[in-house]
Image (cartoon, rainbow, N blue to C red; front, top):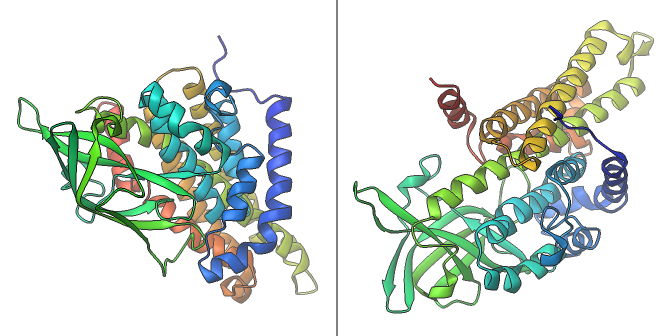
Length: 384
């Protein structure tokens, strides 16, 4: 049995196609969308048309039937140009439609997956609350059974894709009781946008991913039917952990793509910028910095792809997903910082992409598990 991944021609063809799309369609408008905090329905639908949603979902359910390595390559290539559009794709796949695919009933899959996989609609994943971030089990959102219905009350915050013109609804995790030990039991519900008592409002003035949609959700006596339960009552926490494992792969891919984009921008600039009668790329202090950047990116790519290969082989990958997300996000930080340094004062100006890369990387050490929490996850996985 092979011990690691091996890219084939299909992977390389996919990379080329996504890179061409990102360069031709996203790069020309990325700065304007980011400056105006505009979520682009047009780009999202275009990304759906070229198959960037539902990538790991079987064709029979409306997806592309590809592997995790393919999906991660696609996210990486979009993030190489723009973190906002990469966030839309990553959250759309790993947080929006993935729980429906893995845990939804056949009826829920048939109802939601076709339009989620085509890029015609998006779904949010409502986990984080004002007082429940890293401690996701501290959720205060409650759901109480009322006959054949459930009544939800609570709030969620920082939910990607939950308040776009294309959003169908959000998967809401709520406390629905307690187990024999008195610990909270969680259940996930698919709450559609037009449900009375449910509101989702965009959050503005973000530091990063300004063209990605982030929402704050309120639930006030929000009544849903029994068929809104995702999977079985009480399975919500397990579903959340599984979803986060897969989500960490996509956040790692965003870190990898961000680092690649920042590195390429710095390399190009270093060859054009002349100081002391020669390009600064020929100055040892700069050339060594670029060499370190290239080495870090290659190490990050190899580790992430192997973690995705483990997922494709249906082998345990939780530890590797945590390591990949932690490493790739911190490499993005280091590479983006060096890229700004190489640009000097120009790296602080919005006319240069590295300014945006530097801001976009900051969330990568927070979302899908902070760097501190991931070190805790890894330490437990190695038996500490």
